[in-house]
Each structure stands twice: as C-alpha cells, then as structure tokens.
Length: 270
Image (cartoon, rainbow, N blue to C red; front, side):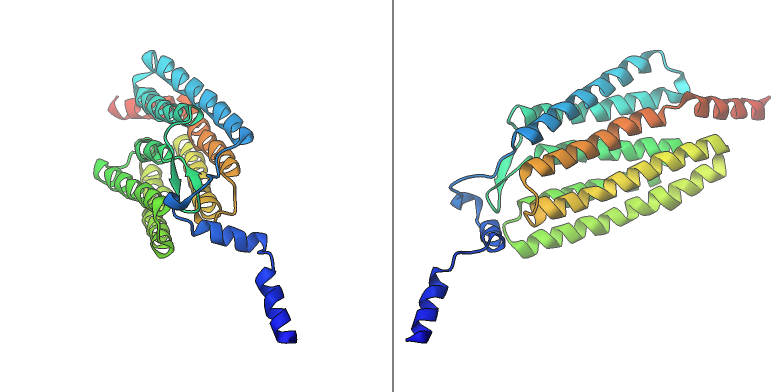
C-alpha cells in the first residue's frame, strides 16, 4: 500500500517552473494556445531605440551633403545603417515583422533583415577606415552575412539539435570577422596611417567586437534557452543596437583624424 500511495502522490506532484519552461520550449508553433509576447517595458525601449537611430540617420544624411569628400562616404554609410535599423524598429513598434517560434515565443524576424543589411555595411565602414583592400572587405562582409543567416535559421528551427547546430555554425563564421577586426584590418591601418587614425581604429574596432560579441549571449539566453522573456530580450537588443550603431556612427566621423591623414598625403606629393 505504501508504494502505491507514493506512486499516486508522485503522479499528483506539480511540475516545477524549470520543468514547465522545458516543456513549453518543446511546443511547436502550431500547438500554441497562447504566445509569449513583448510587454510595455520592451516596447518603450524599442521606441527609444527607434528615435535614437532615426535621429542619427537624419543627422548623418544632412551632414554628408556638406562634408569633406575624405569623410563623406562614412556619413552616407552611417546614414544608411541607422536608417535601415530605424525602419526595423518602426516595424516592431507597429506590431509587424514577427513570427511564432518553438516554445510559443514571439520572435521579431525583422531584426535579422536589419542585421543582414546593416552589419556588413559597418564592416565596410571599418575596412575603409583601415584602408583595407576591397576583396578582403568583401570576404569579411560575406562571413558576417553568413553569421546573421545562421542566427535566423537557429531561431526558427523546430528541432533542438538543428537549432544548436545553427548556433555553432554562426559562432564559427563569426571567428573570421573577429580575426579581421583585431588583426588583419588593424595591421593594415598600422602600415598605412598615422597614430591618430590608428587610435580611432582601435576605438571603433573595440566597440564593434565587444558589442557584437554580446549578441550571441542574448540569443542564447532568450531564443536559445527561453531564460529571458521577450521584453528583456528586446531591451538588451535595443541597447546593443544603439551602442553598436549610433555610438559607432559618431565615433567614426572624427574629422581631425581624416584631415591629418589628408595633410600627410598632400605632403608626400609636394
């Protein structure tokens, strides 16, 4: 009788929060009765990020018109990067650009469209700052696009093993991007430019590597394991996007760096 009673009590035991979360993460989108969606706090940060990105895009576009030809290309690329990102955030705050993924979770796929367009352009910006050859810049841009593609495929995967394989693929493709930013591009700027430009490159590349390296951790804790809610995920991505795009844009347009480099070039031809 004792063993039967124990078995009966075990069958009535309520599942823990961890067990409930693991069970929910196995639900396919078609089986969802309710969806975990973004809340008010996440929406507020999305609005703030949209304002910051839109302001930066407009500022860069207007300044590009009368900018020195040496630095004008950076203004235009910045404007395009922040402009596309602002479109993405406007879509999200309008309730567009999302789908339900495994675990009955709201996932804004429009982020990946944004990143697929904007992050390669940021690499182009950094490559131009370093004076790197076009083929090398194009190769690293391609690796970056592969990383974003892998991140999206991992997000929408319905089989856990496939999800984590895509995550690993994305990390592997990210390695050459980091190597290029910390070694290849850096060596190029060391060989070609003065200390001012070298210091600027160091700041820009450090900001990029550090901020971009946080994105996989957010993915891991949110879409990957479901540990973070949709609002917390949105808040972290908003902070990262503003840091990696807005701060980046204002950092890379330091005119005195390009003026000094232009002056050195003119001296060589005198």
